[in-house]
Image: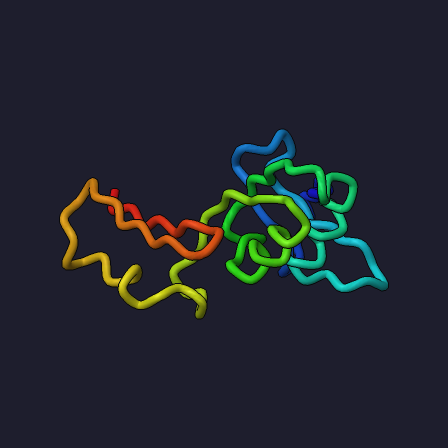
Length: 116
């Protein structure tokens, strides 16, 4: 949750598309606040229902996708290039022409690398 805050502090964030643009990201205390743990807590009501979760690169990872797929929940999300689980072939974008996609198919997942 983004709580609006205009004061000075080192952990204040700016999110342009929010009604309150400056604030502090709030997470629950006394629990694991890792991105994958937060997703599992929020997604608990829809697990095993066959629904899909769309997320941004802060929360998405290949290991989380595998864990949620075991519980019949799929995800769509972006991945940062610095994730260790991405194959190096997908990361070398300078040798590929623009407007091209590269697909990687695994047992139950697809990884797409797109060159804008």
